[in-house]
Image (cartoon, rainbow, N blue to C red; front, side, top):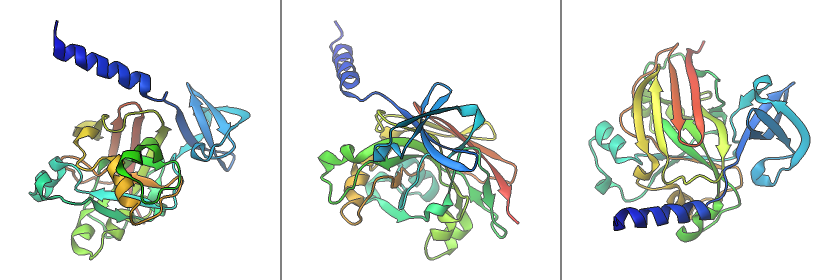
Length: 278
């Protein structure tokens, strides 16, 4: 008998038994009205409110193909994490995990968030716009001074994000607000999914269809549980607020007309095109 494989099998079984079932949620626009919905197959069941605010089915359903999906988040605060994968830090900046003592925390305006299939916009004067494949969590309940061992209870679900970044602005501005938080820089979607183990999900980014980034979320230096714990010591997190994972490996420039796709295990694929602003 292979003891190692037997133990691994028992742990996996316990993980499955102890985990919540996955539910998929979306925000969508129909006839000028934006609603939350629960996705089952190709059918969206309208909810009375956001799922993390205990929204219930209204009895109205629509086909996914007949509506426009919006970003499945509606935050007041959006926190990002810099240098949270050793591969990105080492390849991009020549530093390693050992040099990181605290998360590289910063915020961006929530107006930078757009939805799946929406166009990312490169403003006039921007010439070095990069993609960044990331995961994003949504907070499920008010969080203040949360102990690390309880932090997972405050995470409602997980989605996908592309942290669009203007590298020249990032290098030359005193702060990163413009470089990271300009309007139409940050796609999120397509689904908000509960019941996933956010500490062990595969992530892949593709630039014009060619793989350019890839990692597992287990490679995060500070995982989402720690980020909830850490951020809640200094800020009050409210239901719906979001935290980004930080990106992995090396990134690269996008030109107008380019597309970037990010696939995360259990969530789906977020795809957006970059266009030139006027």
